Length: 479
Image (cartoon, rainbow, N blue to C red):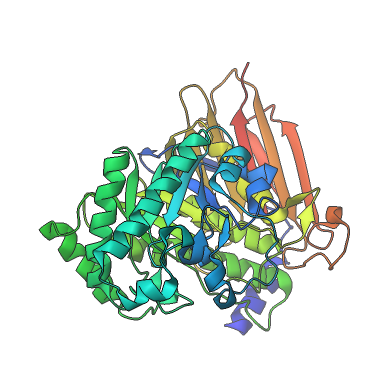
């Protein structure tokens, strides 16, 4: 494999760098309708982290609160983990300030929806019950109802702060519960309790969408048995008032060895295409007809790549590919980038996702793009080297193009996609050192090691050049 890649690279160097022949972008599929809040971020654990990133969250469709990793230990009244459980939770690096419902409402944009993860596993202090009480009598309806009262109080707190919750998930992935909980490995108990919770949520506000926790096909114990039990309960009516199945999907990948950085970056980005068409699609297959698919916690296990431009493009590729799973996929929550190097105050990973989020804003019709002459664009590990999507609204359209190769792709024709007689604005971000991180303590403008470039320009014609390892947005501008 390494020999073949070296040979291909040598042959490429024999021809002029950059592809000068026009590549025609065309609509490659039928229109797909998207929900208004389809892509969002998890809130993090403080206002100083992901929730305040201006380039991304100000245009995010939703924010997921609290952070999934601490949700089953969460006390919403204090905006922190339950004190009794704090010794079980790794708080390394977590800032000290709290994050209450009123803080979330104050921080997010007016159009951003709230997806609230209910703490069903452990009672909070206001219930008058200890963690030990909850575990000693796991099937007690009195204990469950005390938890439910606290859940409904949280929803009321959001309303008092000026925003209603749009969606809730009843718990989190119990196979990854840091503290052995009453639902770990006990799907029947979860079904009984989730049914009671869902009934109360709908009684509080029938417009709130309710999701139950499914398990991704990633080796979690009894994942298949858990999901089959959910299917049976939904079909038989033992689990009612449910709108969606919520999956946590954390991809695992590592950098290829024995290659230079550009080749390694290309191969890694090829895996992003496979991730969207493989594992994510396999989760969707597990969702019964008539129910929505919510996917959460992307990229939390790509730690070796965090802080690199490759990670930014990896996110963008998976997100754009996943949009094709709509309308079954109606919620895609991405992990944020609070602890990675920043460029002009914005994490580079969120810089890339901000492109897609701005393209989505007020545009609810999605189409995939294909490219004539694609054989001239080097495929990345079997995936296309260049990919793109088109998003349309009532009176505007946007095109997002991703070049996942180390080649300059020149003269990409977008004629026929853009409305004539309208001003179009282009924005492009690229990095010539896609696997390089900024040094610790380095200047924020150094980007991912100095190679990150950003530019904006009016697009006078119908062609655009795609720099190596770049994401480009072309959108019509209001008069």
